[in-house]
Amino acid sequence: MPARIRPLSPHLGIYRWQIGNSLSILHRLTGIALAFGLLALSYWLISLAGGEQSYAAAARAFASPVGVLALVGWTFAFLYHLLNGVRHLCWDVGLGFERRERHATGWLAVLGALALTACIWVLLWHLGRV
Amino acid sequence: MSLRSPLGRVLGMGSARDGTGHWLAQRLSAVALIPLTLWFFFSLLGLPALDYAAVRAWLALPFNGFLALLLVAALAYHSYLGTAVVIEDYVHGNGMKLFLSLLLRFVYVLCGGAGLFAILRVAFGS
Image 1 (tube, one colour):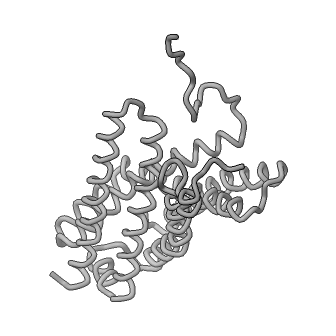
Image 2 (cartoon, helix red, strand yellow):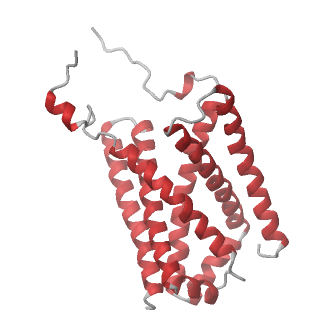
Image 3 (cartoon, chains in turn green, cyan):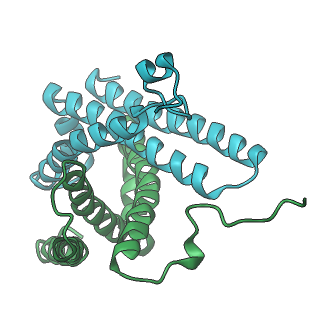
């Protein structure tokens, strides 16, 4: 009998898009983005240990348009991953499984992360730090 | 009736021979990262400016250097645990999966190690 090709889990193609799986996928995507953020953090620390010139070069890179865009993206990725991560930790101890709670905390995580990202960068811009 | 052997039940490792180790490590590192990351951002935001002298003096303080070491170590560990599962889930084909899994380990040890070494250089002033 020939082997049949069966879908493997996790099989993204068959899910109807809704808040639950969208936020789960966003959690992974922000985690992957933050992995690249770790590379940037290491680069920043290495440049700091390397002396004034290498630090200035890193600071220029982070202050460039692409650098600022990446930092804003990492801010959102971090805040969302943090808020949704706390949501996951609550589930791990058995809290917040009801449908209404799941949806409310999900929206709180994604909208809260967006709002906090906006607040932080408006504040930084206002203080002249960007 | 359980089909598991008494030894298998005692070891509690399941069919993957890994038990709950990965799951637990991911959660514990996540819990550790909540205060560490918040300390990092608020501490840096508290500096008057992020210029070389200010940041270097900040990281040279023993308290900050120690927490920064813990932060980079926990970040690298947590990030490795997460991205390793992404590769296990979405990269099909055993050769490619093995190659990327090993590459990932090398990248994390290299990147995390370089970050830790940089903190130590600032802390010990070389």
